[in-house]
Length: 311
Image (cartoon, rainbow, N blue to C red):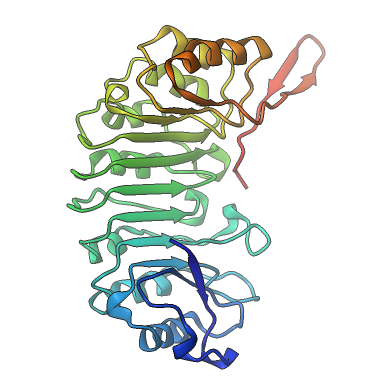
């Protein structure tokens, strides 16, 4: 679905010139420095709000200093009855030039999901260091859940694993680094990896992690893999040890795609992965091969790998 920016009536845009309310995902930002609540109320009064199917919340503080997100979340909850057709919601589509991810103020996003029982896609950007939180929830209609984070708290990961989401098909968790609140462990992922929690799941992304090798080793024997058509272990610090675990674990040849981009595999291991899976029709993404940094100490060299998204 194409995205249309709602910039407000004071830009000279007439309601008659806007696309049909249900034909686009509406992005609401506040670059004109108007209070978000004012712009949001105007948006609901200008478009046919009862037909809006998707909303993207961008920068809510304008060109000034970034601000707390709680009023934005409260406004979304309070507007639920105005948006009965809403099926997709993306919170904090904010670029680095607007605010670094680690500085972004987030909060408990669970009330927003609970306010929209017909929502099918819910995506959130934020870090534990900025207050991102989530509680276990039951939601009958959610098909896609994404947390894009430079530091996803273990508590949030456990809450996802404890949630009842019978229709969930696509789950993507950017786990990030401990420095920005990403303290999730492989043990926190156990309910997700068991395969029993989300019976409809066909895509799993456990990405952007500084423990990507450990995650790959757990995935290699995880029951959930048998039901997947696509698997993403990208954006993190995956190295030869993690790839070896994947190759010697359960078969992956039933997958349509295996996304490993932004990795630290050697040339030889990269070839092994592709040669093992591509003849079976698996589309393997091993782009963005990274080189580790080395710290030469007095007695040894220490290797440093970096995730794609942290600060």
